[in-house]
Image (tube, rainbow, N blue to C red):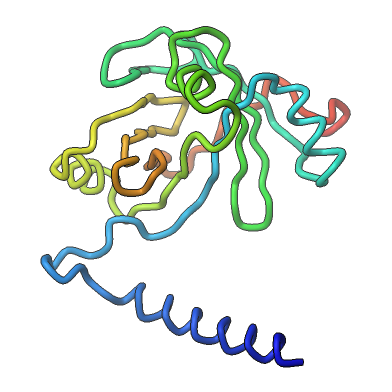
Amino acid sequence: MRLTTLSAVFALSLGQGLSLQAKAQHPSTTEAPLFTGVSEIILVVRDLEASMKRQWEEFGIGPWQIWTFDAQSTRGLTMHGEPSDAAFRVAYTQIGDTYWELVQPLDDKSTYYETLQERGEGVHNIVFQVADFEDAAGRLEALGYESYNAAQWGAVEFINFDTRRTLSVIAEIYRVAPGEAFPPPEATYPPEMP
């Protein structure tokens, strides 16, 4: 009974704290908070098919939509700020209000490959919502955060900034052209899904 009461008090306090935090401004600036929400978690994996299968069977995560990102499907692909012809496969789904993405590098040219070599499978980056993409990118650059990877894919433009010195994770920001959607998936998992 006492644990339940403490949990309720903590939840209420946390909720009030978050409400106050959302309205707060940084003490040394008049700018609004840079990030307005978290929309997606991206994990790097060695085997996309096996990872989707395990997550679907053990946790019910899915169904998945699958795409290949490479020089033909993206524009302006960069790794560490330099043009790149890296290739990787992406599986995308949603868990509640959060998008969940798996990335398998197809060569040794991407930051996804680097992450696998350095740390193994796991979180590669967190995708943050921002009020204004250009302003957010400028603010991150002004704070000394460098582009880790970036590209345009269909109607989506994204930049991953190496924010590990402060956030301990790569931070991605994105924008989607108004009225646009993702291209149709190359495949789905389970395969019989529409």
